[in-house]
Amino acid sequence: MTAPLILNAVLRGQLGGHTAAWRVSRAEIAANTTLEYWAELAGILEDARFDTLFLADTLAVPDDPATPLQWPLDPFILIAALASATSSIGLVATHSTTFNDPFTTARQLASIDHLTKGRAGWNVVTSLDDNAALNYGRDRLPEHDLRYDIAQDYVAAVIELLHGWAPDALVADRDSGELVRRDAVRAIDHAGPYHRVRGPLHTTRTPQTVPLLAQAGGSPAGVDLAGRYADIVYTRQLDIHGAVDYRRRVRAAAVHHGRAAHHVRILPGVVPVVAGSRGEALDRVEELRRTDAAARARHGYAAGGPAAESSGHRILAGTAIEIADDISRWHDAGALDGISVHVNVLPDDLEVFAETVVPLLRRRGLIESAYEAGTLRDRLGLPTPDADESGFSPRWEPATAEASG
Ligand SMILES: Cc1cc2nc3c(=O)[nH]c(=O)nc-3n(C[C@H](O)[C@H](O)[C@H](O)COP(=O)(O)O)c2cc1C
Image 1 (cartoon, rainbow, N blue to C red):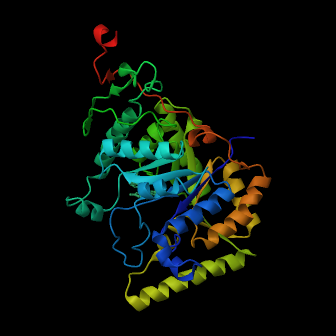
Image 2: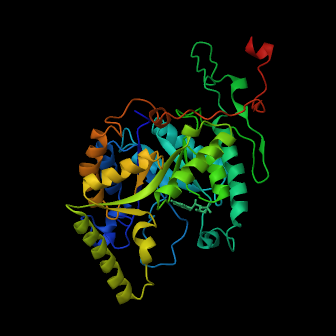
């Protein structure tokens, strides 16, 4: 069998990806901000053996007043809270390189990776909304390619910070009283074009060293960033040929950066709508569309369009078998290494997908049946990224003979 497909669940806070989800879900919109609700979703995912739970994010209320609750909680804080409510699933959170700083990001990621015993992931985004800039004292976002240049420098600094403690730096020898091996705790002295960080972190090396890195940009600069750093790529692909081509380009970018092509996994978004027949599934899509359109007309919201109901991802409407067939076909064509499941209505559609489509994929040998021990990287067959540590210098002077004698 080739590498099993990665099952990634993209969860949105408005009780699903669809603008009208909160009106039809069995959950109440107030659940959005409760740990119980998110823990219930994580439980559904762990029972179905999803590999990762993925939280998208923006840093401003959108212009559309019908969708202000898609990202109600800070993703890093939410996955930290989910650390104790889960035991196996990878927890991936979106975090912007335009409005944070590498030291804080590295510290937060290291903390979550420790607390989850190696299940943390970071979706690296550069942000795409000028509204975010206004919340951070700027008039607008830096322009597109500059944002990516900043991101390259940012991710490099974070990775260096995460390597600052050598694996054997913590000695903690109770007899001799030696706490750390001084030369194994290194300042990174990162001085890039945009970020300067001395380091090191005040955190020992974490189980994954570098939490799983995800990326979601499709431009040449985005593909380059993905090729250089990403372990998984969450992408919008509407036709199979475009998806095959995109996957080929990202893998080529990985090879260009000295990595193995199969160390970056492409997970196109899909919106499964499972029903007894394709006609019934399409009726469900249409019904949600009408529910949304009526509310928009009634309350003077601008028209949503198809992107609002599926975030522009491919809608797979049909029976569980038809949906499993579609995913198999894309897999056979080399269009994906997994899928980013993005349901319209939480938790309802997620439960149906987990109960109907997941067992079919498992029976076909496309996905794993149980979690193996180890970190998220281990489970996905992904290596710990190398870092050139030769440029690092010890943070502390070596012990003098007198002091150590
Ligand atoms: C499928 C997908 C999901 C994304 N999710 C987020 C997100 O949650 N938060 C965010 O700020 N940007 C998100 N982005 C935006 C990208 O990170 C990137 O900034 C944007 O796509 C522009 O870069 P590009 O021209 O390389 O695509 C997403 C993009 C795609 C394609």
